[in-house]
Length: 473
Image 1: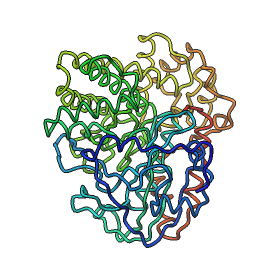
Image 2: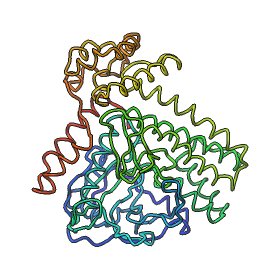
Image 3: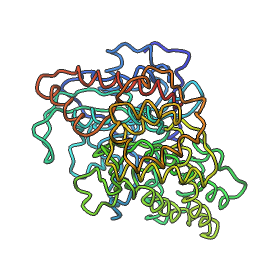
């Protein structure tokens, strides 16, 4: 691999010790066909110098990146899955392949999905369907474009295997995905240590997280550090959840092993973007009680944070931890006010006015059954775009009586300098969306004719969204 000045490999996770992971090997795949390479992020971590053949060797056959781990690490963790505790989790079809830093010096992980069996595979084959990989690429691209801090789909390689799955036509094609994210450590990593009553392990993992990911939580005493760490994780997860709301996104599987200590959104299985606002909308067909429905996501995050607090009681008294948990609701609402105003391209006012705007917006969305993303698109820019919306393709929606209070609230707003209304995307009539039927439609030609044109077009369309909103990542 030709080195570049920006390539800065690391092996920091190995310092935790072998009690936290298992050294594993990737599965040998019959083929390695490159289907997606993240050209925006490969340069930010110094890997833009790789040829496609070299890329495939590293991210399809998992030849080590020089200076990082000589062998991949399957991490150990437990977790609550739909609030039932499972001590038999861990990286079952993925591993931590490498660590490196971006141009800002931030520590990043390259983790996999579909890279083969590990000691934690629980009778699974350790594989990922190609459709699952395509769906995750689309999810991460769209969420990043809409301002959600998310893992990045770094690479997708088709592996030439035929997989059998009970929930889709089989046999189906296989793939291996590589994610670029800020941390592979999750709430479930701490839960495993609590299950073993391992206070020394909790302290070791806590100090590691604070040193490398959450330095703002550093404190003189261990109990104070634990409380500060919980507070930081609560703040970051509150922000992510609020931005899901503003993006109309339902994660679908908010288990404790899917919530990491950076608060970064990741792991996209049965996700959905709302076709229209429905508080009880669920993403997973197996979520029969609606536990992870759209409007229940903030409460689910709070429940998961309480599980992290339980783990930290091994090193800190509950009376230090509880205030950080109790702040979560306030943090979520503060972040929701900011997130909605960001999406609408208007400046925040005071809390009362912003809360009223949110109630009017979601009330209109609920009663009108208007297309969620279309309304957010039409109303971006607040007073500067109202006339265009009212005379546009959804004029009938905006002629409804229940839109009048929302219109009045938006007319009283100031357009944000970051609204970027001159971008060609906002001059158009229709938004770019990623609802379920669109994903199915672009998958069909891939499945039947190996035709990737619709997928590539959707990626290009999402790039326009990202450029238009200009949210930093």
